[in-house]
Length: 107
Length: 117
Image (cartoon, rainbow over all chains, first blue to last red; front, side, top):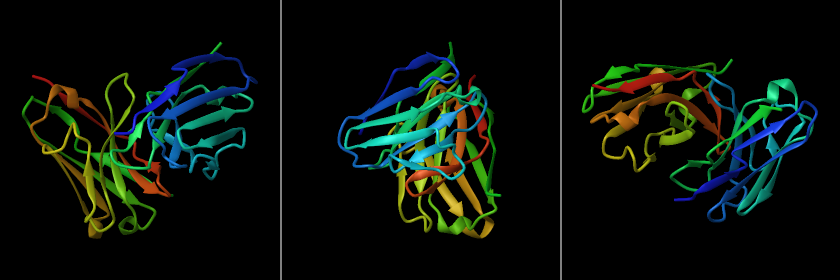
């Protein structure tokens, strides 16, 4: 199974800050990676797929990069509605696996 | 608007069974692969199962293989998860999710499964 390791597990940041979350795969997954945002009591929402393709309707302050084993999600200027938990997910092979999550909290 | 609506969750005793349903609307259900994903209380996301459009490519997580069965009825725009021999560790919110370009782009609101005596 491919293990997905996210870091940090939590981050405290202020509105307007630049935030970067990283995700490392235990083996190469090319660009078969997606990022999701989840708010409390809600279903996850896809932000990025194919490592760097922005899902329709997602603000351009979100961006993704990476390939192989190392990936990152960047929020260029944190907005109040961005405080949430973020997950990476590999789609290279079964079983599909998610990272452990990164909680972005208000400083 | 593309929507998924899960149902069938509830409280069940260890060893019991439940059948979850997921009904789709707003898109061509039969064209897509679907996944079940669960989330234990206060925990992260765990993929459970995947079924392709023709039901001829099905996968399960090791934690549920042999106990859970995924199926679909394209004529009824519906996805199912039959869960047998339930354990306490199966307690979670269960989401169905549509797959597109190798990501889960549409999710239901979830249905809660609680396994407890």
